[in-house]
Every structure is written in C-alpha cells, then in structure tokens.
Length: 139
Image (tube, rainbow, N blue to C red; front, side, top):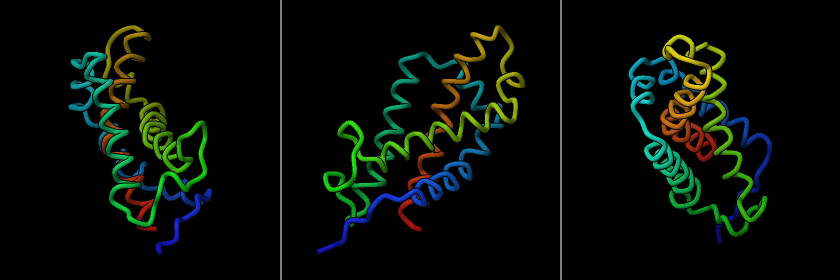
C-alpha cells in the first residue's frame, strides 16, 4: 500500500519556486497582455477552470501516492490544492505588480488596468500551475 504524503510548509515552498519559475516569462510578454485585453470575463472563467483542472490532475490524478480524501482539508478542499491555487495565481500577480507590467502594457484607467491584470493573471496561472505542481510532485 502506498504511503500518502503529508502536507508540509516545505511543499508550499517548492510550489512557490516552481510557480515563479514558469510564470516569470509570461508576465513580461506583451502578447499575454494583448490577449488579456481581448478576453471577456467568460474566457477568464474558463481559463481559471483550466488552471484548477490542471492543478487537480497534476496533484491527484498523475500521482498514485496521493489521495485527496486522506489529506488535511480546509472547508472540504485539500490544503495542498488550496496552496497550489494560491501559489499559481499569487505568483503571477506578485510578479506582474513587482515588475510594473500593468502600467507598462495597459493604457487606461486604474479600473481598466485592474481588469486586464486579473485576466492576464489567469493566463499566466496556466503556466505557473504546471511549474508549481511539478515542483511539488517531484521534490
């Protein structure tokens, strides 16, 4: 019988490294910001759903040693998955704001920048979740 890995703070640290590593190039790419400007909120919701599906699949479907029903939970959701989603979206948002990408790529009001930034974060999170989940699973 396979041993179920327990969630530790070190797992989040690994996710952060992987998430930032893969998110970086997409945060500073003009094409991502152009796509985000053209996306509707429907497209954004679908993109977020894709991130959740990739994250869940990478953590629990691709790794036979993990069982989401046997992990610590927050409101019925495994802590490891919550951490993965926070890292995936958070790393992109932190990088975007730190590197001043919204003001570099988006002309318009503060509200417009915030909307486009939210959509760009959803795009970048697709790549960030791959890095974060991989780092969590491999290390």
